[in-house]
Image 1 (cartoon, rainbow, N blue to C red):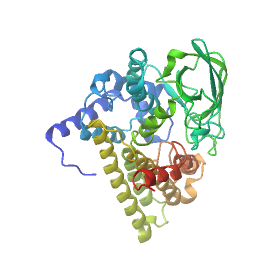
Image 2: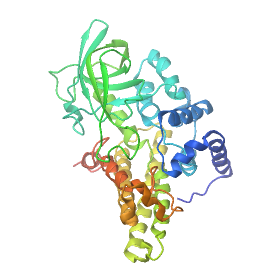
Image 3: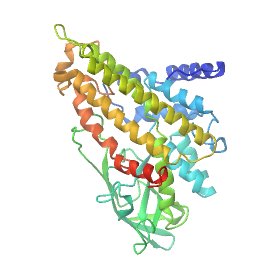
Length: 401
């Protein structure tokens, strides 16, 4: 998107770009553009550099350590980092549980947890989904029984991204099994080193070739959690969960990296082996790319509106569902089109990359894993509430249906 930037915004973009070039390690940047995946150290080193600069919690209010940026600065920050090949900020701490803690947590919880989130010295994961309780999250069954100054937690969470890296997990647990489904749920912060917690990897349809081990099942067996680790009131966790989901769905912008992937898709469409026609010669293909370009531009506008609402103190509301819906669906279109453009060469065999060494990879794994990336990307329209759930929210809130 072309913005009419003020001189101070141009200077800000230059400052972010200079910071990225000075602090993003060449090895990490190479992983972005050469088809390798990140490990925990890549993410933590980069996020801690942002934390030292005071930029990691860039959407937070100034009173809690945010930089106080305007809407345009937030938009430029994400776009410049995408252009420079920086890893995506892992959202669970700074963009999910952090806002819940500074909005609903006690003063003691803010003092205890926010600095580690803001500086990325503590990593978080999300304990929401369960077997039988995914998009229908109110059916969760993980139970927390209060015994004095502790809860005893038993149950299972699944599809837990980066649980194998996590220092802490924020969990929805059922504290009143006799209440209505959306009631009787509490929001707990749990140290992953607590006895009784075990983590098992889930091998996804792509064989985990589209990245490192990513999703896991987390089991809780008589896990003792101090009552002081409960955020807000007992049995009011559904309120905090809905607030968090607004940030999960809209607060992790899709358009910067989507735009970058789309530009690489266009290059891939033009790069074919000698003797083969480029798919760009097909007018219907160019029309498809034009539609994607328009979709991404529209998404950029939605995301700027999202930031504008946060900056004015408003909750994003159904706008977060619109962003999640279109961001994930358009990203799947880009992934599917990348497989179509590469054709035979998208098969997951590294030796096939020799057909054109100058083609930039689509996504962080490269041409040889376009098919695994496609399979892995099918989950995007399911996690955080499926596309059907997002459409239901929009029809109810925006149209009154």
